[in-house]
Amino acid sequence: MKKIIFGLASALFCVSLSAQNIQIQLGPDEIGINQAWTITLTVNNAQLKGYDNFPDIEGLQKRGTSSSSQTNIINGQISSSQSVIMTYAPLRQGSVTVSSFKIKVNDQIISVPGKKIKIGPPVQIQQNDPFKSLFDRDPFDDFFGKKQPTEFVDVKEDALLALTTNKDEVYVGEGFTATLSFLVAENNRAPMQFHDLGRQLSDILKKIRPANCWEENFNIENIDGEAIEIGGKRYTQYKIYRATFFPLNSQEVVFPSIGLEMIKYKVAKNPSFFGQSRQEDYKTFYSKEKTIKVKDLPPHPLRDAVAVGNYKLEEHIGQTELKTGQSVSYDFAIYGEGNISSISKPNLPHTGAFDFYEPNVKQNIIREGSHVSGTKTFSYFMIPKEPGTFKLSDFFHWVFFNPQTKKYDTLKSQITVNVTGESQKNQSIGSNDLGSFYDRINTADNSLKTVSDKAWMKWSVNLFLVVLLGAVGYWFFRKR
Image (cartoon, rainbow, N blue to C red; front, side):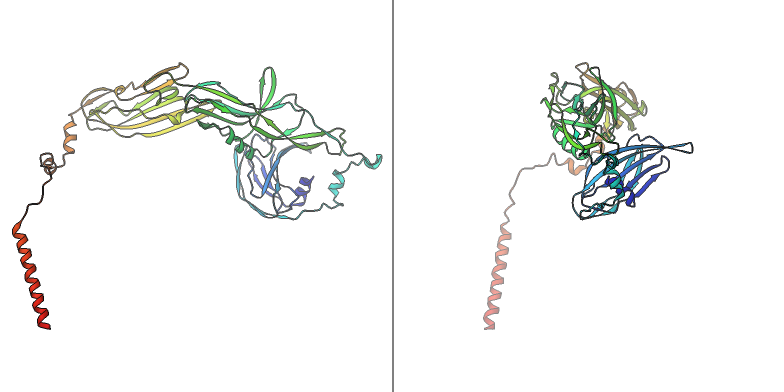
């Protein structure tokens, strides 16, 4: 009821996007500590397909969202609107600053300027409030006498919180995807809704993120219902969190039981036409503990260093007919499904036939469905130093473990280059010649020797000191 009063009695700030007629309304500039403040998102004459989380505001606490829809027919013209209202409760009296924020609605980014809110002392609702007299009492009481207080009953829900994985057993380094969902059965009759999901999810992730895994988060932005069937029973699935994890060692990955608090409404036992039909309550749903078994990779000299996944090679070279001293670019691109971030560059052997420079690295990661895939490209510059025909597979090869075949595999270059021209090996040596001074270092005697004794120098110094002392003594007695 307070939302209606605030909506009519207060000047609301409105931001609109004409292309889809999207409006965002901020609540009043001044409220009491016992009153609510709201942000209302409205889409006119279009479907509300999705929206970002509402902002967290210091000094206000999220109390949950409510939604409504409306259709009007005026002079044969049909108009409709859908609204989502986020309600905030003040935490203290004083001034609260709502910073400017951006929110994504139907794939459109809307910028909303901030404002200041004054939180005053508790406000007493006037008895002559027309809205209070209209909505807080049943008009049929005037005809049939004062009714008894409305009795609310708890309706048994058919819903659950579930953490599921697409695999129960993996190798070290092999990815598996975990999904945290709230499932509501098709025949559920208990009204429920999410509340304070941002804060709750932050606490949940601290508990369920395994410390011994690399995480690729799917970053779910909008929680939309999706119809699924489990064991012949139909549910609406609301995905809250999804990520692919890659175990870093053979320890089991354990997801503990976690709780999600939902707003669950009690319903009126004997609802009247104008009376309150439901009462807000809370219930916490808990997921079951889940354990993933992790296996060591089969024996191999590179077992502790190889990547795990299903990969293929795509390569490209500027040209295959080369001259000694002529640089050429070469791309060694590894693509497929797995932990793309962990892919390391090929280990190139030392050779006098080519100079290889450190590669530039570029990676692209795709998170889709329940899989993580992508490409990691190593771009080299190399300079041939010797003429001849060379298979790049002698230099560029990359070993990985394929969990699907349960075998180690090697990606090898299929390119052969022909190099012509004179050998530049001697030029390389000559360019490192540091001169005759350094050439003599290897033949010079480096044994330690004492400085030679010069007796005549000692006598000369002693004689000089005697003459000096005599001169000083003569000058001193003459002054006396």
